[in-house]
Image (cartoon, rainbow, N blue to C red; front, side, top):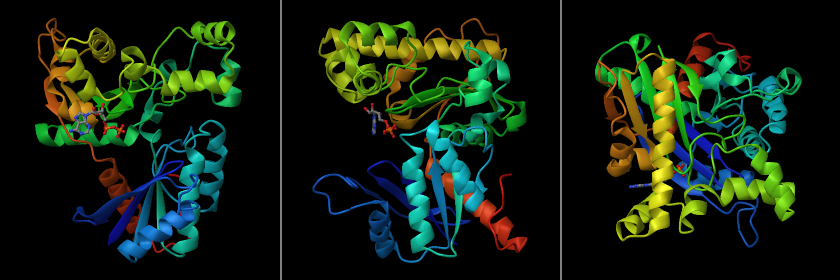
Length: 364
Ligand code: ADP
């Protein structure tokens, strides 16, 4: 069965085609500049058409959907009710979910009758206990408006945690794992017995670690202070926090960790400071998650920086577990969110075929 995995951003579609259940990757690609001035690709529908012309017919589609709020704890087959609920999540994920929906709608039109699965970035973190996800704000903001920690990169954290258990030949249910997804976006998760019990990203992906261009944790009072002092409106403030901060903002050079390592080596002080801050924040989170799980059996590094930059890993781990009697295994495990999505789509679609239902299932 050919399963197409689609990751729609506001102006891009990344895709991979897998032969399932063998998990062989057949094709991968990326369409960019969708709906941008001067681009030949007008919208996600035209983008998908180009992809399908290239790859031919597929048997199923798996979509990465960023925000599933509290509606989706697991991947689901797409039907009208699911589309309605994903649309409802747009209010709390206005940057991401509309693009994911555009991909789903384009598939509905171009691939009628082909089953689609939606796999949510937030779903894996739906197991967080209430005391970890409710903010210190008036409780009604959570109850009435869904303002709470959701966490992201869930598919990646889940994938590498499973891989770690497989490699260690131990049941996931017996392991305390800390997973560090360090790419342009960065997040850490505490995975206790296979369940995410805390994670560094929050209501949006801005919270937590210092990232390529995002600030991560800051004093929340700074937001109003900076807006007032520099007369910034909401959009400029949002852009400052999400696009001009983090490694790029601190160094004044780049959001690319490879560039910063090279510059730091050549003596650039701000590049060195950006790396110091980045590493220090990771260390604090690992320490905190080791404390809340009363130990750590495995520490996993993944994504661009986590997989490739040994210097950053070494510095984040230095002296970290000296106080523990039993040392955790420290592992590098390449993430593969698309394969995880293909697996989930295949699993849902095969079970749906075997139960011979014609409509997509409601959420599980
Ligand atoms: P994204 O979150 O955009 O998927 P990646 O996981 O590709 O990001 O990570 C990008 C970061 O990883 C950059 O800071 C980059 O410098 C760093 N990096 C280091 N080595 C590599 C590599 N071999 N390939 C890609 N990124 C790398």
